[in-house]
Amino acid sequence: MTVLAGRADLREKIALLGRHDFAESHWQTFAAWLASPAWTFPRWLRPLLFASSTTLALLGVAMLAAPVLWPTLRWAILPLLVSHAAVGLILRKNAKDVIQAAGPVIAEFALIREGLALMAGQRFASPKLVSLRAFAGPGDAAIGHLRPCFAVLRERLKDWYYLPGLALLAGTQSALAIEHWRLRHRDQLPKWLAAWAEFEALNALATYAYENPEDCWPAVHSGPADFQAEDLGHPLLPSAHCVRNDVAPRQFYVISGSSMAGKSTLLRAIGLAAVLSYAGAPVRARSLRLAAMRVCASSSIVDSLREGKSRFLAEVERLRDTLATAATHPVLFLMDEIFSGTNSPDRQAAADAVIKTLASRGAIGAVTTHDISLARIARHGGRNVHMASGPDAASPLEFDYRLKEGVTRESNALAIARLAGVPV
Image (cartoon, rainbow, N blue to C red; front, side, top):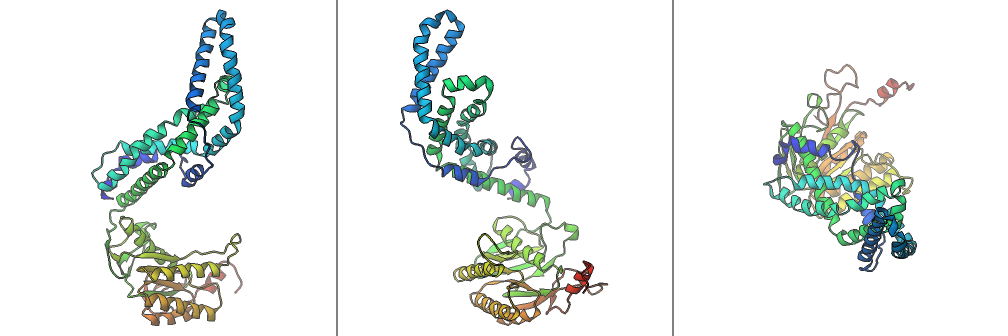
């Protein structure tokens, strides 16, 4: 990461890739293309059509150069035209299917090739970057072979090229070439895309490192679940307004507090710090030491009409997966407003059971809640903390976003409702 952090020139070149500001590529587009049905054809068909088209083109040029030769040349030109028309009709459906399937990737291939060419032209000493660069050269060269085919497909419907294109079977031959390329490189293409995606992601993280030199480099160790941060903040908040907290749960925090007090933001800051650490990036903290853990989050869960799931069911499924993961791996769990989609007695019983199981499996993390009756789950080895308004606040809506010991004593739901004009 430090190797790329100082390469502002490289990041500028990456930002300029593509013909438009909004140009980007999507993995799903290529995956759908690779998964489309294969069109198998005899190996001799492509060279035969190329030879006949070349012959027809040369005869046509000769006829235009010397019209007096038409009576002689027509006996060669007309049979070729008839045979091309027959072949075009026979292969029309397959060629159309190939062209339609390839349509979405044509524009995106240009961007991918530009990126691979850029990566191939760099010189790196880092073994990781060298290994990624090894995919770039072959990928750039192979994708370059598709450019003539895509150019023909773009031009074949234009007035000046329409009739010559039909006569020379330009669309059909391009479809054959594209399908041959797809079947030949269908195993390599995902590797080229993955190499470029990782290179682009590393440069994005390097950009963050370059723009935030005050952030720390975390120390990741193997062993039991562990997370100890000093002055931890959310990386998307401006440094001047980012409130930081020391976060070092013995096993887990139960974070109570009013709405808008900063509980969810703190939870996300913990999760982002872990994810950035494992990605090899700096984190918004003065220091951070953590174990290699699986990050399991239950946050911003919503119901789904399409899947027929309520919010509560979706949350239960997420927590089920968390429990299963904690049975085999160190886990950092982050649960925002745990079981808020059900009644208070069920919420207490379910939360107590989940947290007890996670604690028994050595997991650490944090749970936020508005329901102060859930403070009792801290008895399983956790710690009650809260976020509320500051000591000198003039109203319950003036928060200092600091972690404080114990269970919250404040409630601001009615104050927020009145602020919104609700007569309560």
